[in-house]
Length: 211
View 1 (cartoon, helix red, strand yellow):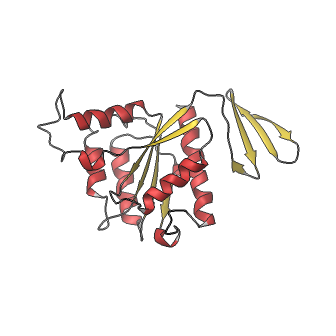
View 2: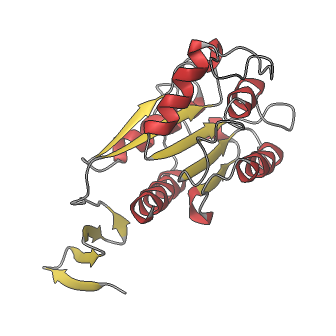
């Protein structure tokens, strides 16, 4: 249940669970009284200027003022998962990954599909969290942006389920033919994609607020 009051002709002020949201023309432009939110973004592509990086940049640009989106940049530095190294004293880069995941209020994964599956570097990073549990009940959003992507998207949902991530339905998005929707300068040009990204961001923030 929530209460709402009309704000002139521009939108509706929603007051829910002590938080304040503004909805203008049906779109989320929320400003919340909650402590600032930190979202850790992980791109499954190691390529600089990738389409997935452009998607993350678009979400970062549309985030409310109290939401900070930080890009994890250590994917390529992680060693291949080795149970023999998964001890109380793992490699420093693994400890750093786990700490960044732990400190984040929510996780945003944006990834291509490789060979009908999950990119190896991303899958490797997720494997390093199985025993340590950073994803357990962690609000998470998943965007698969690729030429097709449905197989990798489905596989990642299985993996995130296995590590007990909190993945709301509205925080899952598949963007096929992504290169037709991003300009060479890295800007997202497709209006439908931009609208869908707002829905994903809103769902992730809502899941964080409910945690």
